Length: 149
Image (cartoon, rainbow, N blue to C red):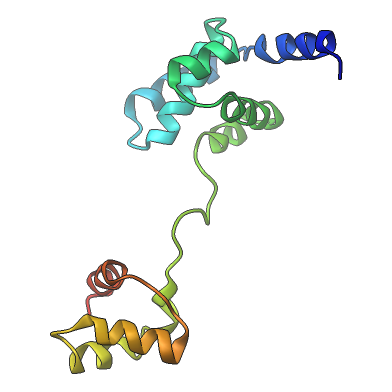
């Protein structure tokens, strides 16, 4: 890729705008004001800035995120055909986030904790030796609280 073609492709990428229909604008405004999810609010702001004719580089600079993050979101938004589909692109996909490592040993944890209630390091050692589960003490404590053990 020559320097000249790189500049042209760079300029094409940064001058991309999302035109919002009236109903899309209402949904974006409502979600930006009322959503408790920070990812949804951030992506709504991407759309609002783009509708105000801000380039992708300006949006990434204003929001302090990478340009690729904005590009991937815009691709998903444009790929969705319906308003409901576009709303789904605002949030993160299901299945993301921390997985519960300790779910498969839930049945034996109460016994282990009862025997070693004063020292959870023993429980961590048993989990690592016998069940090949390496985890931290804080993860174990959080799991026990959530499982009410």
